[in-house]
Image 1 (spheres, rainbow, N blue to C red):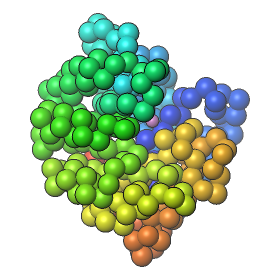
Image 2 (image 1 turned 30 degrees about the horizontal axis):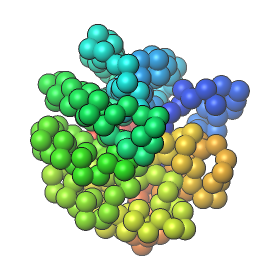
Image 3 (image 1 turned 180 degrees about the vertical axis):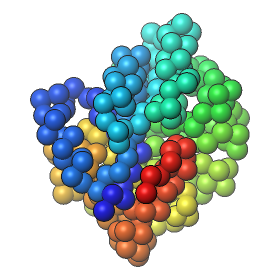
Image 4 (image 1 turned 30 degrees about the vertical axis):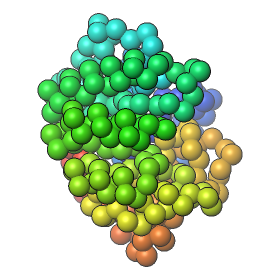
Length: 263
Ligand code: NI
C-alpha cells in the first residue's frame, strides 16, 4: 500500500551514486508514495531540482543549511530562492536553522542567526512552508521562529529532538513536528515521549537519509524506504495500527507541503 511520506531526505547524496537505480527501484517497490529531497546549499539545491524532474514521487526544497552559511552572500541566496519561485515541485524552503553541535567546524552562531532570519523573512514574503533544522540550539531557534514566522507561515521542525514540553509549545503555535530514525533507538526517551504525545494531525515522519538510520539497520546507510521502521515504531508507541499512522502522516505531509494526494 502506498501510504508513506518521507518528509525529509537527501536523495541526491553522492553516497547513493553507486546504486541509485537500485535505490529508486527499492523506493518504488516500497510503501513510499512521496518524499521530499532537501537542499542544503546552492549545489545540492540544483541536484534537488534535477531529482524532482526525474522522479514523479520526488518533491524538493531549497535553502541554506546553517553549517553552510559561512560563505553565503545575498546574490547566492536570491539565486537559491529563484529555484522555489514558479516551480511546482519545489514545495518549501529548507533546511534552514541553527546548529551549535560542532562549533569548531560550523560558522559562528551570529552568522547562522543572520542567515536564518534572512531566509525566514524571504520565505514569509513568499508564504512558503519552512523546514527547520535545530541541533543543540532549542531556545535560540524557538525564539527566532516565534519572532519571525510561527503563526504566520507553515513551519516544520525536522528530526525534532527537543522535549515533549517544547514540542507542545511549537504545536500551540501551529508548527508541525517531524520524527526520524532516532525514535527507534533504545535510549531515545525524549523522541519516544514526543512520538506518543504530539497530536496525530501535527505529526510527520522522515528519514534524513542517508543519515540517522533506524533500527534494525542502524550502522548502515539510511534509505527513504526505511521510514517504514520509524512509522511502525511510532504506531506501537501510540497504540494505533501502522496503516493508521502511515495514512495520517501522509495526509499531514500533503497538507503541509501543499501536494495533492493523488488517489
Ligand atoms: Ni537533513
